[in-house]
Length: 210
Ligand code: IDP
Ligand code: MG
Image (tube, rainbow, N blue to C red):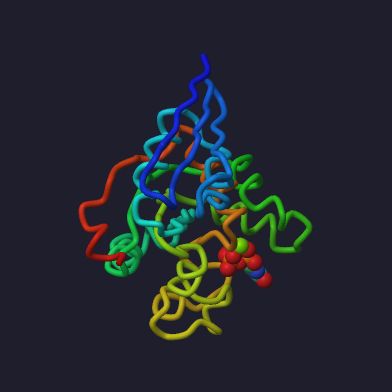
């Protein structure tokens, strides 16, 4: 089944949205749709495309999503609430969360770009050593800002006040993962949340964004 509809918010936001069972396309007519079109690429259900589109279009804020994961050491050390607190208090929206064990294959897929590194095998073992908490956070420039909240890869080079700067010492036990670019975030969200995320309108939107 194919559906074609026209969504009009105001004179700056008129979009033609076309979707079928697998894909969603958004026209080039509006001002902020370029980024949005990219963000829709890996989503599953057509209704999700439309809901996300409606929820994020009415503010003209270029909402991004990032994949944040509390690694096995972060879970075991009781730091789940600290991570959620930092993102939540900043004003970012939690769109998906789950706890799971990670298979070797899945860890290798997630860190595929590091497969040639000497620490790769140890990294995969570490990621499979206990449950992780997987999350999707949404907000304006959340990818770049999320990396600042997390801190540098090597915790000893992380600023105090960042999660790694406050809670760890070793690069091989750095408690948290965060996507490093909008494109990798899209890929990682698709990898960890193939079921999709929770689409809802945040009640505080107008108090966080002007
Ligand atoms: P990032 O997590 O800050 O994005 P990446 O370079 O993508 O850093 O590396 C992914 C993960 O691999 C790191 O978070 C860390 O757990 C691990 N890692 C990176 N470099 C080393 C290393 O030199 N020794 C051991 N583990 C490392
Ligand atoms: Mg990385």
